[in-house]
Image (cartoon, rainbow, N blue to C red; front, side, top):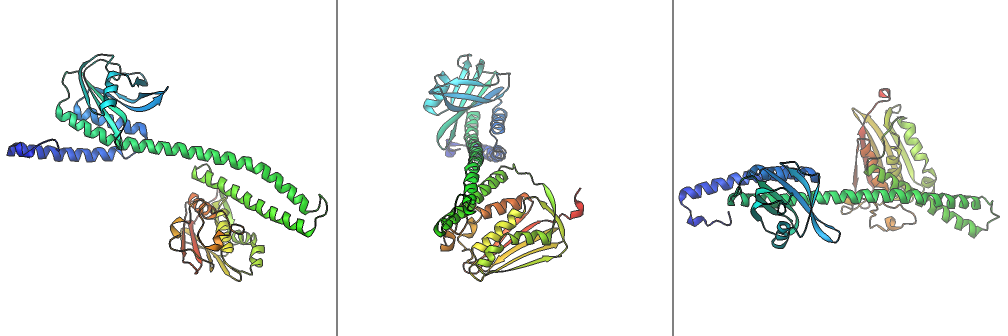
Length: 418
């Protein structure tokens, strides 16, 4: 309505104009919802073209996106409707109609279009070429054709222009989602390749370090034994890093099968704590375990232990000398609730929203002491693994008051196993 002077209209014309405006607004609200309900590019292009044809009465049409090919810009037509067309058509930037749209970034309305002027290569009585913009930049073109001359009236053209602008937003979102998907796939493949390649030399180095530690390469003095000990501890940290990266990569790309296994809950948690008994003793930490009921047997994903292992490891690392750690599991109704609690350094309110981010590590000096703490992947693994088992993870904490992590997963009794 911005191009209309309402003061020049009669009361009846004003009423009709406002009615038309409200109808148009309602239609575009519906169009916006439909165009943005999917981030898939092809359905978005098809929907935009369908709406354009329906609203203007066009007999056929196409939607294309601009791209660079062979050192020049071309329009690649990705959606067709109407008469049969070739599967895909590429229009060079020197095509008269496309060149005009690129130059003016404005609508080009043409009658009696021959095959050479037609964007889709098919002659038409009327052709309407509409620029598709995203953030002010030309990204493509919507073209409509009709079998009647002067098919597209000024009101139709204005309507189609607004539709093309809305389509530009939806198409831009779809292109962004597509780029993100490609980037995530590339990242996933890179992580998979790197973790695989690094494991080979890591295993070799660890093997030689073990041989040296056992004296099979000759006797070691005290300093040499200390050096080998440092090597082995850092090799273990590196192995944990690679394992965590690989696990996160599989879980984020849904390539990790959640195969179920029956666990006796009491012994399952005892085994988890046994892994850290040397560390508990070194820091004189007291550890309690409470399982209700004690004889509970449940089904969990085969790698669910990674959830508890990472939570217990964190509790141990970030709880000081003589600290207290409590681990419990309760089977109630249709859920199993695991709790890992400590009275360690805790997590600040500012840090809480980021604790599950990969490679995020808090600002506390204990956390920043990388020689004795992790890589900032443990909680990421715990969260993803809990969710892959249909569960949730939450945390209550405050700086200086310890942390309580709660994991809730569906209760699947052992007898349900086939």
